[in-house]
Image: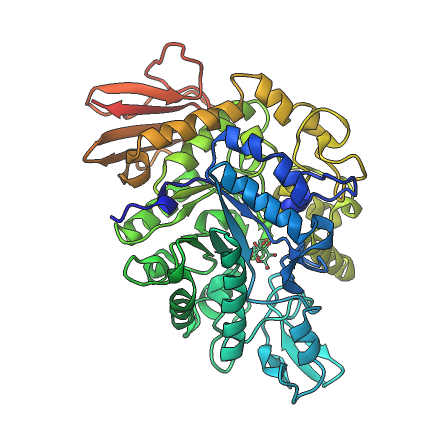
Amino acid sequence: MQKTWWKEAVIYQIYPRSFKDSDGDGIGDLRGITEKLDYLKTLGIDVIWLSPIYQSPNDDNGYDISDYRAIMDEFGSMQDFDELLAGIHARGMKLLMDLVVNHTSDEHAWFKASRQSKDNPYRDYYIWRPQPNNWRSFFFGSAWEFDEQTEEYFLHLFTRRQPDLNWENPKVREEVYSLMRFWLDKGVDGFRMDVIPLISKPPGLPDADNSDFQKVVDEVYANGPRVHEFLKEMNQEVSSRYDIMTVGEGIGISPEQGNLYVGENRQELNMIFHFGHMFIDHGPGGKFDIFPFSWNKVKEIFGHWHQALGEAGWVNIYLDNHDFPRMVSRFGNDGQYHRESGKLLATLILSLRGTPCIYQGSELGMTNVAFERFEDYRDIETMNIWQEYREAGKDLDALLKAVHRQGRDNVRTPMQWDGSANAGFTNGEPWIKVNPNYTHYNAEQALADEDSIFYYYQKFLQFRKVNPTLIYGDYEQIDQNDEKLYAYRRWDADGAYCIFLNCSDEVLNNVPWPKEKLNYLIGNYSAAEKGMALRPWESRVYRVE
Ligand code: TEU
């Protein structure tokens, strides 16, 4: 297996709107991030991924870009960006930008021109049809919007203000490569590519069977016939000419398809975020139709990916990001075992094979939030389904409960810096309310408490660097069927490690300890005696002697 910096790196994702406000307008900004670089250096991460910071009308908080070469006004100026990048590099860290090129904003100059007339030179930058097909948008309702000016419909797989680009048009592809070069020539270290499997659409745009949206994504929207041709072209034209990290948001990619994108011999992407475990509790009605999940299923998904990619491909490891609930609330116990489960989940993401990605605030054990009124939510996805429910006269209380569990604003409340007003995020009125538990969970307290989740991350990040078997080593599950236990082995020529995770509120007695002599290295309970039983949410890492 090829050894390289982007496999060894640990990514930290920043959602700039919610990270740190430096000028009191209630919205996080680039100078705010620069102020906190020492904090990130102290944590010990290697790469910062910034969710989009480009000019945007913010229909989808920056995932709707109106100018790829300008900084969003609320976030600051290009000079602020240059200072941020210099500050990151000066501390030996790297910067990953978000590349959102499946769609633009409807306020992008290309789209403004495109909608002018059917013979406008930009018409073919987007996907126009006299009649829509039956496709649904990710954010509810039809994926087509009628435009009165030319009396045709345009395709938008996301909000109606995010028209899909037409990648069949070579000019569109050249524009994308050119804007990538713009940022790479400034010195950025790579891209996280938003919904990249969706860029090639199926010929003729056939109707879908809408009874199962997930299936529609996997089988109709994603992995279109030209996607690999486009990605190879992008690699040849741009990525291969720089020493960068390319990460695809791998929505709709099955484990068997994974290496088509990330196989070492493919010259497409370095790695992808896969989604199986993120959709694990989504019922047939989608994310707000919640199903219970099982840890056996989580284990099966990670095992399946490992096996399917083998030595040839590489993935990201993550349990939350700006689109999914807080990991300690979803996969852990954010009440009684907040600290233990927060650390156990850190152990998991930092010891599976792949490049880990930590979402801002996970190192503080930040949790989901439960606003009592829909009016306090901001996310377009929540706003759209709220409207759909109101129009259909459906049960709004039930929906609110589902939003508490699954809504994207769970992870978008301001970063909790300290116990002062608005969690030290802003001196003004924050664009979204802070989570009221900021008085318990914040960076200031975490840094003052040597047993905090923060210091566990710090310790484990250092541990991982000096034990590269945890990066490159092979992976095999130890237990198979115990729903409460996730145990696995990582090994290579340098040695072997066993990781034991009790993913439950109960004491686990029947732990299948291996016969070999085990040397305890790191865990989430204080160094007290390590018995044969695993305590609630206990994690332990051993070296096999
Ligand atoms: O997300 C794509 C995606 O897969 C999401 O639609 C996901 O399924 C959804 O958020 C779950 O509720 C990317 C970005 O990460 C997301 O923030 C954007 O809204 C979306 O693309 C459109 O750019």
